[in-house]
Image (cartoon, rainbow, N blue to C red):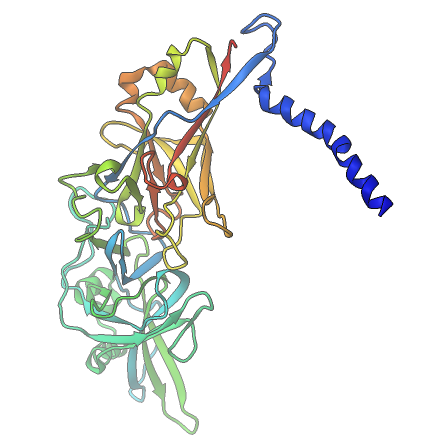
Amino acid sequence: MVRKHCLKSRIPFYLLPILFLLVISACTKPQISFQSVYNGDNATNVIRIDTFAVQLSTVFLDSFITSGSSAQLLGRYIDPFFGVINSRSFTDIGAPRPLPTLTSSSVYDSIQLILQINKNFYGDTTQVQRFLVSQLTQVMDYPALQNAFYNIDSIPYDPTVLGYADVKINPTAGLTSQRKGDSIKISMPYSMGQQLFGLMYRQPDTITNIATFRGYFKGLTVYPDPNYPGAMYGFKDSMVLRIYYHEPGPVTNQLTADFTIMNPSTQFNQISADRTGTPLQLLNAANPEISSRATGNQAFFQPATAVYTKLLFPTITNLLTYQDYLAVMKAELIIKPVQGTYSPLYSLPPILNLTLTNQGNTIGPILPYGNGNLTIDYLYGTNTSYSYDITTYIQNAMNQGAENNAKNGLMLVAPSATSNTSFSRIVIGDAFNNQKSNQISLQIYYASYY
């Protein structure tokens, strides 16, 4: 009992130094010494403010290059914020090189189209999806005045379905439901294989001349059945049209011949989005920019469907009117995804870059200091964010003037390596979002006289 009493009597004594430090720190502004640059030899205070609103809008940039991406994107999924997303692939097919040596004894068996997954996906992978194949009716040459294919391009094709496969894909394990391998195999018409097999046997100009064969076979398009939505999948650009045949004898010799992608640089993905019934239903080429105030105090970003987020800082020069203002010492931009808009099915981009932009929404150079890595708050979700040190940009914006800052600003972009192959997206809360934990913020530290 004596020990307990003595311990209680000493508690206030032990707390005094701690309480003293807390009071001092609470009443003192952060300080930084600028020697004699700003305020003689006196220490100059640094003030932090976050009252300058970031003006957000969602921008539609219409088209982007999808050819030569080294990936075929196939699938269809439904996103509650971005709409029904669909992607199909167009591929130029070439004859085997060298051609196999067939004899009068060689026997044709069957033909399959084989696509190998690359483990990239977006959406609900638990669903069975149906992939269809049709033949092109036009050679895959670039349209006039183009040296690439874009997400809005298409090649005419025969709507007759040559073959299809119903498959469930486990991309993280690298497996499909077809024989537990990493590929989708689609049986093609027996007659198609017979014709190609006959060409390989006779070896006329139709198959030995590259240009002639392109005009004969033209190519293939693979696309999802609209009645089987689920996810978007990535496939390697190593698709093959494989003929199976054998040489009879005492021991049957099973053989194959592969018609492969003729020119990977022309293989492209047509990506479309039906935004009916979503906050973005009015966003299109005719109406390419919508303020976040008109979309529920939210802005949207998904470069694979040509949707970008623009940021303006129209009132930042008001800081010059502060009587104690000396200079911007640091500016940190914090972007937060709106809670409830992302999940394992609709994942966030791991990296978001910032570029300069203008009134015409041109994507300019990437800020060398504007790479925002994602930090995820797995416990509560409220601190999930991307942060950027944009000190240099804000310092320059202070000198450019209010008129310039009302027109020119920043654009969120994805790293170029993933911008046209990843469907990761984000919904960003603006400064007026009804949940403070969802709001974008600009935190400025400026040097003060006082």
